[in-house]
Length: 401
Image (cartoon, rainbow, N blue to C red; front, side, top):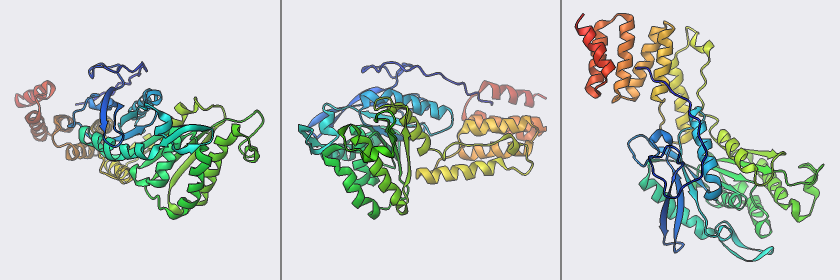
């Protein structure tokens, strides 16, 4: 049975706290998590992928999770980006957890800073809450995998970098967007100099975004000679990037980008998108028409090799999408490359043995090749799994011939 994937235009609307899960225009829902560590009730916003119906059911597959600081500002944009990228085959469907902050200054800093003498950072406790309470709660409640991404902007970027340096195994990938590394006399930058040469970051990914915070005519080279407070943030990020590039032996997968035409607030959206494109640059499946027209090209083997690499990058087994393989099988069948179509339909059955649609598609192939016996067998297997009117009609027509 052919499956048709329709493109969906997402409407970004305001988040409603008491939104109904069945509302197609709702980006997520709110949940309260009790924290013994913080002695507080903490609120988070949660988005379950549209491919899972946007609900909490665990029987439709498991998903990587993005943990997002400053959730009230960043949640809708990241949800829209992930859904768009998923539709485009650029990343897997992902759960997004937006963390809200009663006081972001205390949540996202450690120690004190002379510019804000009344603020005492509680960052260690806050990250302990995420590690020991929030992540276990999400894993036990929702259909998650082991792959986790941590995203933060400004002070959130500072928290991302502190976690990357001091607890790198907590997440698989880290995104710091214009991180406020000036905090507490640039202590994070100083710690990085000592930590980076001693760590092995194999399997870890880091993306750093920097906005343009400089006067007209100043570039990222000249600004490093400046000493004013106005450029301290970008200078700290540039210093950290220099140390990251000095320590390539630690096997970190790292990229940074300077956004000349974006300021501190606007860099969030473009930085989030570019970060996720970089993190999942291995995910996109690219098969060209020249491949499909090549008699020696084996699409089933190509798919298996591609998803083997994706699985290695993600740290768990990921199989080809059923609809993706099904559509490719019909494309081969319509091009009269019947042997290739058969291998694809059989691959789909091997990966999805309980899918009636996979058997129905194989039955269609046997109809085209004139193998009545195998077609009947395939349609019977499809109907044993699920009553599909189209399959029933094809089977009865064959039996009455």
